[in-house]
Image (cartoon, rainbow, N blue to C red):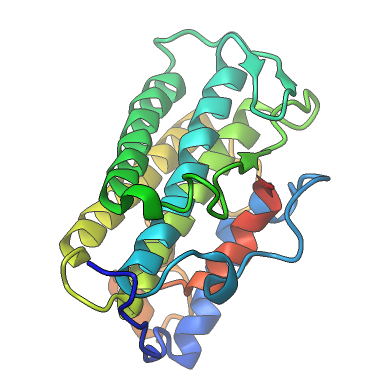
Length: 260
């Protein structure tokens, strides 16, 4: 794999109706994400063309790595908030809610956090020195702020829904990245990780529904497959197929949590 491979101009990944569905998913399913911008967040939002290092498959892998790095740290900070507390990379103190390890949310978040860390390590291994999180590359010194140090805002419901929203965005992000691959080398890996993101989304949603801690104001119960169940009743996206979210839309949603 070479970073000299040029990225072609991909075909659009969404129809007009698909774009509306993705917009609904981002505006609804990621509502808490949109309302939680860090005071020191990167601005303007990162873009796929300018901020993501590399060309061809390397660029797509770095895009995936950027999301996995964010998710990995999200789980670390979420578990700090739910359990015994800690300090994030920005030096902010996160006070723990002192939930036990037997709590369903804690158990699943701990397991899922390990999986996201493994995803991050996989992409860093595949990319080597070209990894966007290494050396002097764009996100090498990136830190993430999810507002979990705010004791008034960071309730159990808020924390778990932030994690759900990140996973749901990941579901659409991997599908939306497919047209940007130059070779088929990593398509199987992307599909496998997309499936993992979908399972995480469904499980975390089930916990939210079971505990009755929906804090986003959305109709209850929340759909366990949000990107496959939103849209107009006659839309093809309601056939149970997850909707693609194109890279710039994803980066617009996650940039408020990235501090460079």
